[in-house]
Length: 105
Image (cartoon, rainbow, N blue to C red; front, side, top):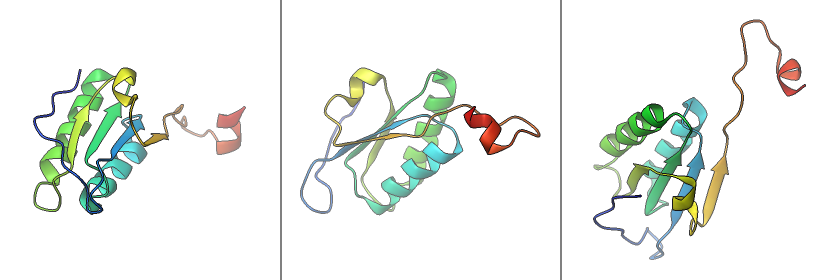
């Protein structure tokens, strides 16, 4: 379960939770951008790779305190329950020499 000492209202005065499923480059970049802009009160990253999602959440959380008060943490699918937005960007990785079309088939 999430450990969140304080959840604040975002710039518009609304508490906004954003969930991001996946913790690779695209997902962590999206989380970082959202956190920097201060559009979310809380960002929850979810991934099957617990070590990776913990590391990505900590990296983002340590990078944003001077830009916004957005809380960032790793969580589970249950933690996404009341999220206003869920970004689903997880997927299979492209293998060496594989085209994007081959990845889809």
